[in-house]
Length: 239
Image 1 (cartoon, rainbow, N blue to C red):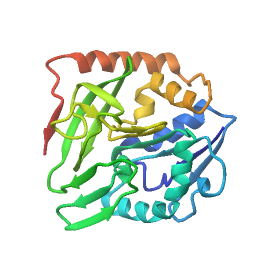
Image 2: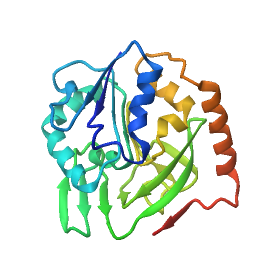
Image 3: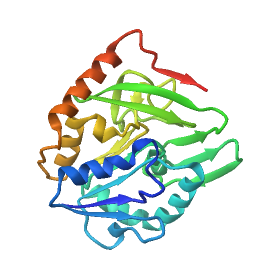
Image 4: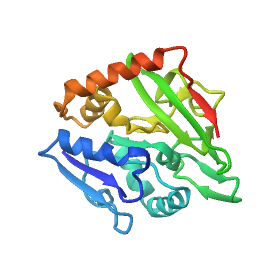
């Protein structure tokens, strides 16, 4: 397997950097490329089997969009070919149609793979938890974001929320999905928190891996699910 972790030095907030590290630990024989923002992405002119990108600051988000827009055609080809791509936190927003930075009075064109728009308000942070369902698989995660997404993702969502909010406070459908492109605002880091989903995601790339410390990871996962099912646990608030 050839995997690329995009811009880890600036796209690894909230522990998201450990998603790539966890995959590398699970697949020691794979070829991993940790590409900094100052370099051309490896996927632009090489075959890859998996791509990850994580959470970043809002000004970095605009720089990343500038970097990726010229590669939209290549990304589209990879998505059509079924290459697994995981975008977590506000990296998920890169694939929207448009991002409106309300407090900065700026607008950025997204990659446009989904017909949704993003509203980012730096004066209003939402923190929350999600207990979600992926075709019978339980997925848990956290949210800490200045933005919500708006549009119809009823035929392109990632998770159904058992508890927590989806694209926005009125939605119970979390994230966006097109073939094996998975865009989710969940943080955590998502892969470390969800060993079964990690195995599922690697399986999309044709890899069957035995995760390191799997028993301990599953024990922690089951405990977190139990906590998230507790009706006394608060699932979201604005700051």
